[in-house]
Length: 373
Image (tube, rainbow, N blue to C red; front, side):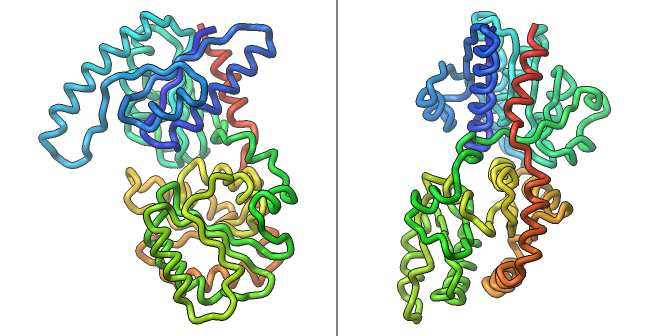
């Protein structure tokens, strides 16, 4: 069976695509069938670096995203979309896939549209509670729409209603398999403290980081609590300086790092998470059942992160603080409330786990194989 997978621009599109591709590969191998996977993205996107390292064949088309405000650059972009569409037709004709799966990003547009118009079965995986424009358009042409959030269904056109299936969002296997005890060893942290995990995304989040300077001061030396904060590379030195300048005697329970390469271990030990509200990060937290304080990124396309965060809040798994309302004092208040209320934390953890889907990639892989021509 031949499979084209496409998704690009950010890790939030790429890593779910990789997880789905591996799940398709595994299911076909278990059935004694061959599997050949081609990943299509752009040369400029992160996928051009990530996918070859993951061991998949990678090819590129020329596509870029259209600016949402009027811009002369959009004329060039539209021309590139036309070129990308023609390149997509050529690659589909050459590879002859049985199924095409897209996980989002502007590169998916010409790939999935070309495949659908050429009669190749196609699937889109919508990760967010509020679908993007590209996926809403593509939903009219594809065979199946796999939803990361049930709440997303109402935003798709009526023509797509019969195509939708809730699957959840794919997560890395090591998120599920990492044991709490070994995770403490991996991170070099003590097991006898509640852990607050703070992550603003792969590049960090300056507004969250700035609020955390007050949080450091409040919780520094606090018995039974430790804070593990990934600041992002760009803000690490500022945050380290802020921590070092605190007028407190004991800062040993505040651990500041630029990036967490072992995120699976960090999530395994987290008792509370302070996160943005990207779909993949929330899927990982929910799969493990971690209560969260969510600060949605305010400039995400169509404000989709707030929709993601509100879905968890509605189900009792998270507290939402809007970015323009975030202060150190408010974050301290919410953290103090949660850390001081064992019963509430326990309920939120159960509700978080109830929102989680641990086999989303396998569900999507099954649908892809069933849809294949």
